[in-house]
Length: 190
Image 1: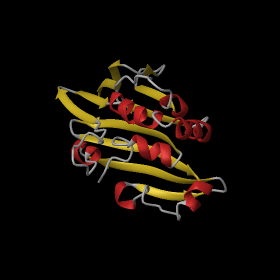
Image 2: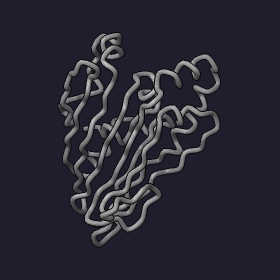
Image 3: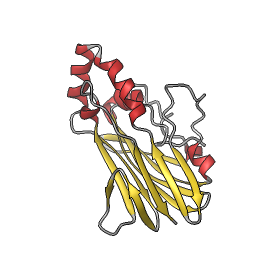
Image 4: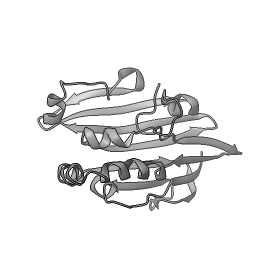
């Protein structure tokens, strides 16, 4: 299994015009459930030869086609290792998220968004490509959230009921040159 949103390569979001909304629900000491979706503009999907590799059934994905989008709906439950294994080689291009049991009923969830900053800076070196990408990606967003019995601390936004922390990134904001990203870190109880 590979974590569909937890090792999201920034380049995929940029080149495929993907919108993402994913939630990790911490269920226990070593169990989590990932739910949500990734969607790509249907025209872009068709131009790419209808490559559905971004939505692998083995990874909990179900491809749904609409008039406007190719949408991968995700529902995957597994151990932290199963949810986090991105199949990458651990190189600098991997943006490896973490779920770590802290003892008791506490888990630390980390999405190292700062690792995406360098990848965005590479695209910013080509002003024409940057302008085109900003225009194509206007209005798209990437949302990550973590849910548990309660949120102890977070660098994101806390829900009114105190059970979910989230962060939403406008994709065009990710392309703004020199924009530093802050890691999304949350400690939840289960």
